[in-house]
Length: 600
Image (cartoon, rainbow, N blue to C red; front, top):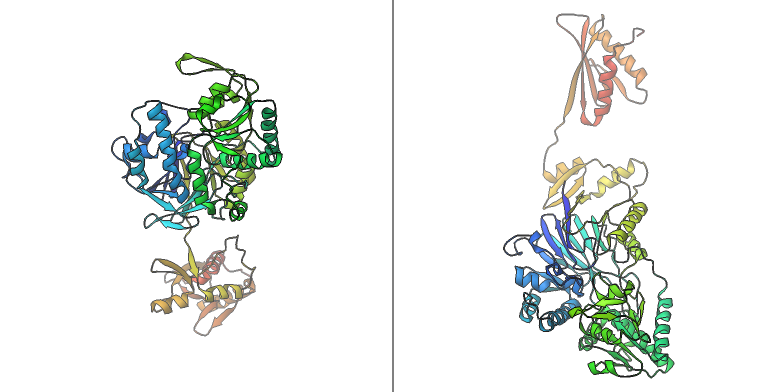
């Protein structure tokens, strides 16, 4: 039986470093190629030696697909293509293609220029890697080669995020990447059609969470920011440059306008000016409301939010600062955090998920003393708040997607093992499908039942309907009798008459014969007459005829009687029938083996 194999090289029972290998119909596909935010050593990138110990990856992979521009999904791409070596196609959507190199370059600057790390990709490698990218449009089927096709669907989450349907023949897999089933202030909700894939590979970051209403969370967020500002404190909001950042900027901008607040709001790094430029460029990927307001004004040009300068962090008085990156593991957000951590008037609001090992994760778990570089200890006195403005699907959203796509099997990645376990049970219970959650380097094999599409001729369908019986139910299988013709790589089921006509063949009659031995001390003609009356009494609904040529006929079945040469009392009954009467023929032979009733 054909099967599909799925092996996570990253994001197996873990969040970060998404990289999943899929083998389907003889094709090998890499889904995402991310880095891990929690590590600085060789665990930062996926272990590509799993694919091949030596040499390039080109021979082993048919294509690479990147779901969106977050670094835990694309951060290892230049390393994989330029340093390990891969020259095949890399597929991603237009916005991802535009934003990915900017984030990669920023990541490179922090790692190489600031931390001085070697054995890392260069700016030139990022450029060379991006030359291998083939842009995808939504809902457009792309033929990777003669057999492999892919199609992208809108995933919400961040600008340009896509879910992908991968198909080889009748086998298929859907990979969700990261997705969001509820629309927000600047993006729509994820959507996919009822494609019934063999496997749906879904993220499960918030596998056990069912989030409260967004409105309450937004009110809570604004209240906390407002209270901190009122008491003269500073608010730090660590974000990734794209996604939640735009969401929260729109929220604060409208609140400041409504309340007529004067405290400054800043946005760090030049990244965001670029980010907002891309939101304007790819306005069609945002939601309906933004597209409508875009005509009068651009939602991404903010009146109250100004660019941040490093020196501002030491300014007295209240302020709100959005700084990157979002998990406080490096960069400007960490620098500002160090400066403000000692003052209890200040507040840090973590708006999204934090990976283990990052400063964000530590302070959310209540750590009050942090070890920084150079063995210095940092006291955390400021208030720490966590508010999920995350653009991931929660448990309800994941279930909703399963209802939408109707997969035959489910596979969870990009989540924590304990939470996955809970969701796995829930999915298996509710949908009665198998759910898998492989760890990194572990392979899940799913056997598929490929269905072969066959056209049925109209006369054959009409004949089936004329025979009566219930009307066909599209969800229930039904047996059809006909002749299967294969022509120009397509299959067609037609009536035998039509098949003979189309193929120009003459009909051959196949008959089955069998002999039954009977002890009967009568003449052959008498035995035949007794046989006739016996069958007439047993087979009430059938046509039984005694023909002048000394045979008995039941439907298409012919019966003849002859005596054995050695013993005149031993009669040999010859039965012959065509394949249509196979069942009746078998019944008659077993009936006659019991002999004729003596009363006849």
